Structures are given as structure tokens and as C-alpha cells.
Length: 387
Image 1 (tube, rainbow, N blue to C red):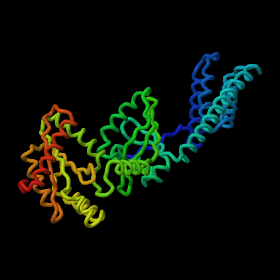
Image 2: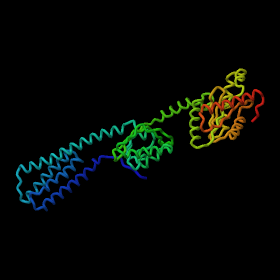
Image 3: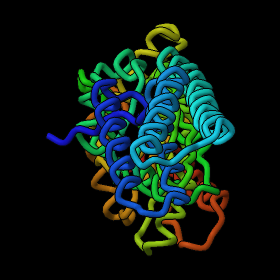
Image 4: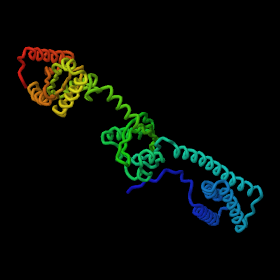
């Protein structure tokens, strides 16, 4: 299992190791100083390295201790080499070493304070904050991921984040992540679905950008909002009584299917139908009986059509059927099954029209309506052939 460690500033190491490393550096520099025969050599200036190391990891006090050690070692070298340094020389060295300790220590302290504040905001944010590399792994996540999706931070970072993405959203997500390799690119209002630990899918709304080294992003769980949107869309495009699509849903699907048929060259047939004598039923038994018939008819017809077909209620007793990749002869077979699925004792009139690939939708529907009218006329005359 591949684990990615959270990003850090590298400012917190074991004090013992830092002190040991500084001691080694002091010893190396002192030995180097003794090995150099030139008393005017600037090797002593290299003492700023272990001083800075102590200031970075142990703060100003650690740096000042390092500055004191450097002065002592400088004095020891001068004494053993028989070199006399005046007070001004020691003062200049001491002030230089102390200045390095103070400046580095103060900058590190300020940086740590800023980092600590950023870490607190990262940790307590209600948003799902994350840092990822360009290999597709999260390198840092906050606790909100556990709250919303149920995974621990280790689980989120143990495998590529693409494995959490819904298959239908994967291509878009990969393309968006590739675009973020450019620091000038940013992601705003990007939506995709992530799998939660319980197997459910959560909609996430992303804002992300990169600095060319890593991707920084935050996501909000908008699952409830998406469910509400889908529910409202369902209400807007479906008939409340029968549960099948309404006129708006029909118009949207008709446009989609005619475009597809134009692109593929496959036949497309439209059927317009209405239930015979529904008004008489309502008058004789009440509208509740008519409603029951409409619901039963819609349910039976929905089961009788093919998976690729589409049925909608477009009026009181009027229904419409889209039959993709279907000639009028093929459509007759589907309509026969629909007649067999009609509630006992009832029938419907129907008219079909095969789209010619160029006519307007209005003309197509007018031809289907005319065929429906002709079928109803034959029924009233008692000459309509039985299906």
C-alpha cells in the first residue's frame, strides 16, 4: 500500500539530532581552520552555517548559543595558533554571528506562526481541503473528508484519487487535473462524484489551482442540492398522475432523438395516441375512474415498449411515443404489444409518422396527428382494422 506523507515545512526535527549535526559542523570547521596556514583566511565565517541550523530548528535562543560557541572556538583557535585578536575583531565576529542567529530565528518563528495559523484553518475548515501531487495522489487532507466520506486521511492518501471518482466523471476529472499542471489554470465550480466508504456517491463542488509543484483544492459536498435539483427536474419533466414524462420531457427528448437520427441516419418514427371514449368513462364513473385508467394504461404501455423507446403524456388523454431506429412497419409490432397491454375493455387510437430527416418537428408531429385523426375517424365508422 502506497502512503503519501502530509506536506510539512521541514522545521521540526529531533533537537538532539540538530545539536549533534551542529556539533559536527563546528568540529569540521574548526579542524579546517587549523589546517589552513593563512591566518587571514575567511574560513571562520563558515560558522554561520551551524548557527543558522540551530536558529532554524531551535529558534533564536539556539542560534545565540551557536553564536557563542563560534566565538569560543574562534578564540580557542587564535590562542592555540598564537594569534592575537583585538577586542574589535571579537566584537565584529560576535555581532555578525548574533545577527545571523537573530534574523534567521525571527524569520523562522514568523514562518512557523503563519504556518500554524494556516494549518488551523486547514484543519477546522468545513470544506474538504486537500493537497495533491501531479501523480494523482493526495498528499494532505483535512478531517472534513472523514466527516463527509468516511475515509481516514491514510485511506484517502493510500491510492490515486481517481479511484474514488465516479466512472462517468473520470474523463472530465482527469482532463481538469491535467490542466492544473499549468499554474495559470484554475478550477472553479467543477462538479464530480466521489464514492464514500459506505458505497454511496457524493457530489463535490471543487475550487482548485496549483503553483506548478502541487495542486491545492477545496471541495464542498453538494449531494443534497443535487438531489433537490434532480427532484425539481423530475417534477418539471414528468406527469404527476402517471409518473411518465410530460409534454416538456417529450419535447426535450424529441429534439435529442431527431439530432441523433440526423447524425446516424437511422429511422425515427413518432406515434401519437389517445384513449378511446375517456370522456364517456369520466361522465359515467367519475374522474377517479378515468385517472385509474390513465395510470394503468401508462404503466402497461411503458412495459410494452422497447428499452430505447420513449413514452410521454402530452395532454389529458393524449400520449406520444418516440421509436428510435424503427420504421413504421417495425413500429406496428410495438403498437400491437401496447394494445395487448391496454387495460381490459379499453382501446386507443394511434397515428404514426416516419421522420424524413429534413422536415421540421412541427411538420412531423402534424403528420402524426393527422394519422391519429384518420384512425379515430375509422374507429367511429367501425371500419378500423384490429391490431
